[in-house]
Image 1 (cartoon, helix red, strand yellow):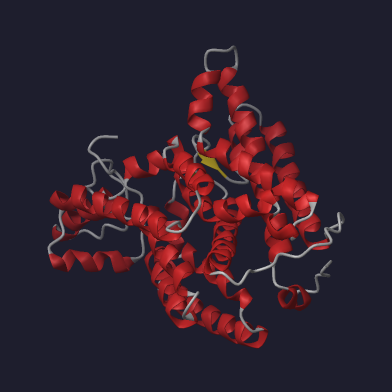
Image 2 (cartoon, helix red, strand yellow):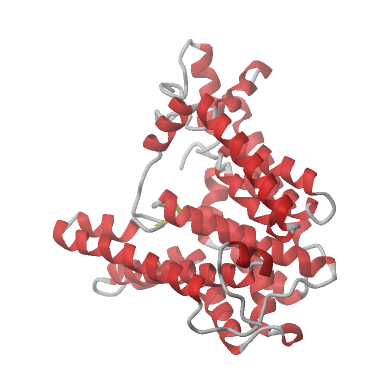
Length: 371
């Protein structure tokens, strides 16, 4: 899109709309595409610092730099295999779409990286980073999954406290958040989520779309049933090692998997650049797929390998479309393959997330642990 860093410009051009007396959250005439500034109002605090459209490139570069710095911090001690897989993802069309648009999610990735790193030393500092992300863009609060590894009573108390603060923030900004939720575009193109397939089908056949919608709920219920009841009875447990990297990668997996599951289910439709949060899952998935230290069963190895493969394909979907476009009905075939792929990512990550929960949390939710 031109001009560059289109998503950044909702903020920088919003400052100019604000200077003209408009509320850019609801009316942003200076935006090149007339889009609303659909972010929490705290971003409008930048307007008093003299922000304007001339800062768009600098802000976009800053967010990109933060994203790359986050990857560097997360993988500073990673082996070559992990670096190769992450490098493959960073160069993928999905990631580069986010870079080209200057999505705010690049900055959220950096903030959540700091939260994952901080929890290795300080729960309080990690919580501070998570709440910073939450205040700026709401969904980072789901990184609270980090705290499941702590003492159970403290986890319950801190979670209740977090719910209280989250509720206050929503209550004081309810009308704004309600508008933002209703305004966010819901596309079936270069997107993932539970609504994508049936909404695409609805464009040509409402009846089949209804069947597809009902089927999606059946698949979701089945996925949660498999994850919770574990009929395969994988008789191993996820072990958090004593080295920092082992703890770091398992924490990263929980954050990345939880964010993907949340975005897939609650957003319903989300642009492919939000796949970048799956980068957090890659190091741990590689560890499980290799069966390090004999802690993983053959089932877990295979599920981890399947998750890795489908994650890579999701990131490279736009290239797959180009390859298939030379065939009759190639784009439709590529779309169906991508949808199946995204659902497999959801199911495998959900299963592995439940499996990797600490035993004390499994007991809390009534889930039996097989060891």
